[in-house]
Image (cartoon, rainbow, N blue to C red; front, side, top):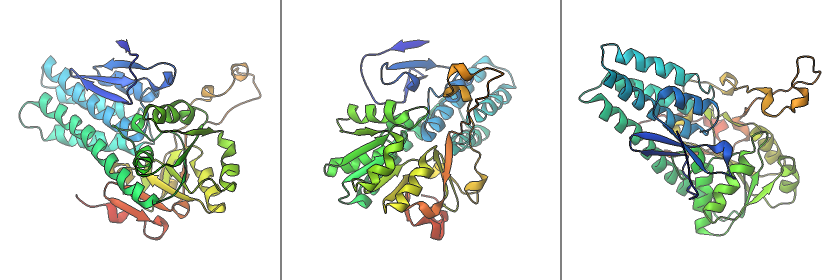
Length: 348
């Protein structure tokens, strides 16, 4: 089922009447449209097709999907309802390979499913809602911490979209920018972020909705902008962080980090600890999602006998040595190349 709305609210996910409302981000900024989901398999497709995107938002959507699976199969009855839920979890796990939040959320929900007490439907729905609420709280905490680190920095550049649209709300990288702008005026720049143009379609739209002025630049203009002296910090999110501090994020982040090093610009990565894969030693072990070439290859080349192909990795890995600070809800790690992020692997 699809509903349309003329009211612009920056919410990637809305939970209403035990249904998951997903903002179809492929339609932004021209159309604000929420698709309504009640089944896990359909939510997996929404993740796979990038209707919902951003590592935290993917994890939250997956948690709601598991809860809806429990609701459907438990109410259908039968002793094998949990097996059907586990089958849905397998489908969800296959939807996107790089975002570790997806697997964190699925593991969390699976553990809760194995230790259910009382009404499984109410309990699992509450667990999903808790993940959603905790993500928003973590974002605001990271926003305040990141803004404090920025101090009086004037020029900020972000890449892709790591805002409310990529999270439960408020945002990771954009959460820091929101908090920083609330303290004092800043010059905010956003790269277009090819080939899906998340910066051009999502980030500047989201900032404008929050009454924050932003300047859009072509990705290829970033080096010249840094050389001009207008940028003090690059602020990005993450889809997976290895234990040594290597970070997987939207394709193009690595090139920005290299440019930043040359121009003495600092790089801040902002992500919840659910994005950290403490079992992964370094970024070389991160699986980089390869999407279909048709996403940016002109139709005239999409033939069997064409001599023109395309390579479409949607993430790259930035080594810890190029990162100034990693900000999480548990604290910040400066110069992660020295210690990694193991100090964040603790209970709250």
